Image 1 (cartoon, rainbow, N blue to C red):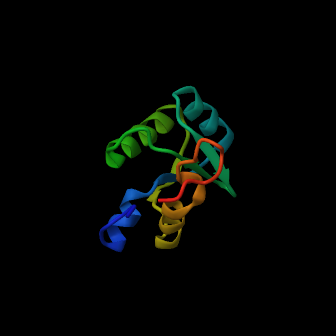
Image 2: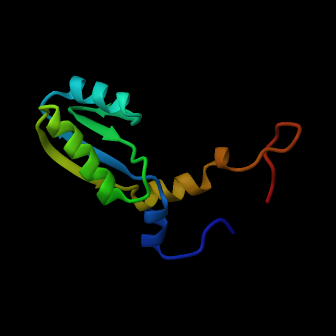
Length: 107
């Protein structure tokens, strides 16, 4: 068994990202990369992977960093996986160990 718990616990266990709406996305992306953050773009928004286990502290640090550099932040929220995404992440074959010959190991 890979997981036992409530649907909410499964969602919480999955990867979360910060969703940012900023005035200068290119500048913000460069700045966040320079301080070691992984950033991707989704439309006009930035998706930033939290580096800490404390999302509230990480959000405050990101916001402070951007604002101090003159980059207005219009949106900052945490987006977790949907229940479906969390389930797929949990059951995706690439997360299973591979046997020595490269075939998928059976539990």
